[in-house]
Length: 158
Image (cartoon, rainbow, N blue to C red):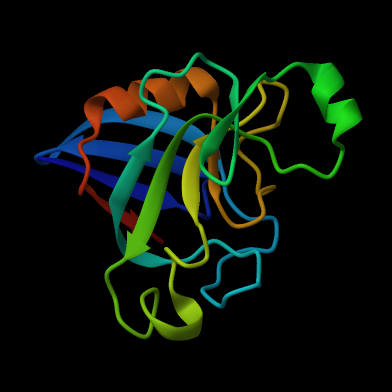
């Protein structure tokens, strides 16, 4: 059984199979820190599951908007053309909270907040907070994670 731990303090993700660590990744969580409230642009804490996996057969650097591929492949000139876009690339894990009142239902619902684990442009610095609430990963890493992690896997964000 695969399970994932995200450590906001160290900006690292650790993947376990049974009780053995099988992967460590550098990530980037919210620049606004941890928090669960809708509109906060913070990374929600607590126990979650992967509710949806999106982008299985997409090329690396595929650009997504509203969980749909746009037909674009990220290039630096796209950033110049769309400077306000939050770049969601390559693969998406859509998260759902499992703790009512903390990260599920009402004003703290992770899924309704559209919190993802997703790829980011290769020149984005990982290892420091910088997202708008989601968990960013390098494109090679998100492809690797996508291949080994089943739908419904549990993720603890702490």
